[in-house]
Length: 73
Image 1: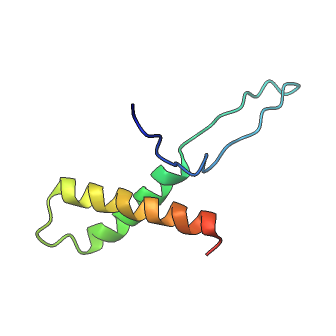
Image 2: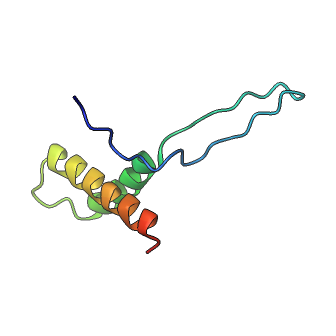
């Protein structure tokens, strides 16, 4: 059994408007958005870290940001 990762919901959802013919788009999750933002910061000081270490650090930061967001920090 796998544990669902809290993704924070959608970062940039767009509502649907049936009269205009627009359909709802979900977009990326808050977790992916946060990880991308953390990744941009890590690129500034990559050092000797591997790509996998950087990616793991970015998602670890994103998960911490979601926890803080839910706590109202």
